[in-house]
Length: 544
Ligand code: ATP
Ligand code: MG
Image (tube, rainbow, N blue to C red):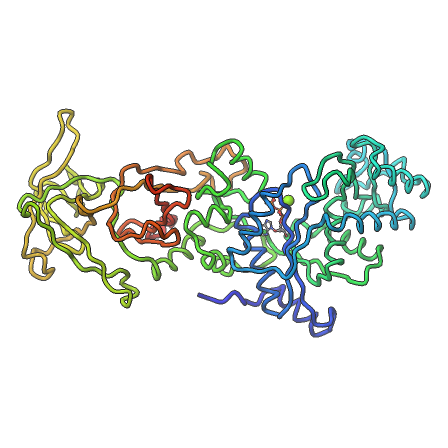
């Protein structure tokens, strides 16, 4: 696996900054999630970037919760975000909350009013929007733009005390209503919101807006390179304007990179939370979800996610990544590391008629052929076995080399069998097959050469499990909303049989079910109702 120390356009900028001594050689990044949902794979890209860059330069990386919108945020999200970052293997140098800066932010707002850079506006939100102008037309000055400083100061203080209703007033920066950059047209930086905050309780009833909070938080924390996604490119002027006007000694630099979008997925906490709230999926960590917790439960490893982030690289060009790229990283890892067993998802019973009753034999097979040092496992076989329904065809198509009436096939690791008889119930459904085996073929070189090889499990020595098979979450490559949800994204196999060589108490163990795919125990399934999650297929099924 490549080390995630690839050079990219951001490290080029940092190298240059270090050469010119712009930040005195310091590199200090931060990951600034809003705690309004669980993290997704897009966030993983940002986490890897920020933490790896700080590692690469011997710098620091903070975790900062951007918690300025109390209505949508809560402690559960905060805990899950910390947990996901740690699971990925990263440790933040210090932990912060934007809400810790509410006092500083308030003081800076007062300073801006005093210096004539901010004013209180009583216009309605609609009016403010209307007066903002468009990309082609300049905005219009608000009627309140020239409100005396003293009035603005007084109203702002009263806003803080809770003297007004939500929406009655806002605080706006006084920049330029005719700026070609709409973000510079007197943006709102404070609004009244009488809502309890998960950390500050009812101490505040005015809350600062993202653009105002973010740059000042960066400056307070001594951040040098503030890495964010491309949609903030047009906010950079505002970022720099605020830092300049508050005369902060630290002048962090905002650098934008492209967001990750993954085909057949939605990358937005808001939309993912809709999937949970409307019961499209069972929870934030449903194994179909592109959340870090969902991928963890699905069986992805921290390394596979980091490897993926490294492979897609960091650029300024937005693009959508194919699911195959993500799945390849875990498939390649598991091919090397996963223990092998056999598992039959849709069992069909076979009676080997010429196999002695009440006898069994043990077959030796590698635990993992890529890791011969791990040794062998014993697989038992006896008179009754299960094969997968899909490995039998009563009326075989051309080129079907697996089992069918009169045909001989090899049982993986064991011997050859020939299908002699198909047993059906009175409705004509196949219930079992009678086969005979060729004892000579225990030695692979001695029996008939056959084209088909199938997997199986010993009916007397296997474990019953449920298996969850997952498919893409949305049918479209670029879904816009939940309308595209793939109703077949979860298929449950209720009666699967797997080889006994499995440690059901090891929740971290990932197995290859030979010929089928990679699986892990679902961490939420109880012992009496075991569920195995399919992590990924053996081959890339996305290739067209
Ligand atoms: P969402 O819509 O999912 O909530 P967000 O950007 O609003 O996304 P934040 O919690 O504010 O979510 O994001 C924290 C950090 O993660 C930000 O720096 C943001 O730019 C970055 N980030 C979010 N989504 C992606 C993505 N798809 N690709 C790369 N970085 C992302
Ligand atoms: Mg957001």
